[in-house]
Length: 143
Image (cartoon, rainbow, N blue to C red; front, side):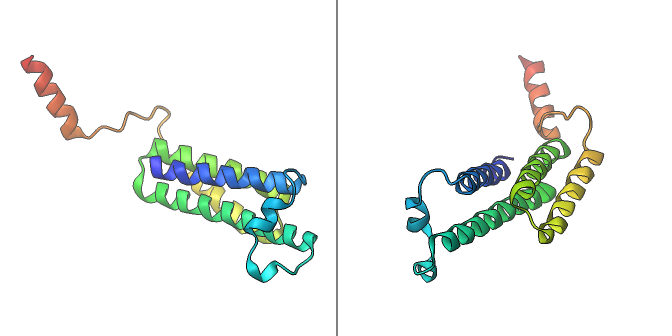
């Protein structure tokens, strides 16, 4: 859960940078500092568009990694948490900076979220192995 949430957290930071870039906040110094060498001679507006594209793609990739990690490794409750957070973030990004090409990615994420919701119980028990629960039961019986 921690690794998947780290990917979601990184995606949220990229989303915040994308918001600031879209609002023309924060000045252009960081755009010039982090832009690829191939784009140094491009006008400032071109650099902004390239940076927006790169940040949007980074958000998509980070959410994708977190979703795939959650699908393969997490129990239903935590899986739903990751899938829902990813879906809500992608919905925000596509609402502001999305194009028609982003629709399949959003549809795929909502499918993942709905699949996780179908398998997730209303109350998800804590993540505890059965062997650990038996061991704790034995220890508490002896005390």
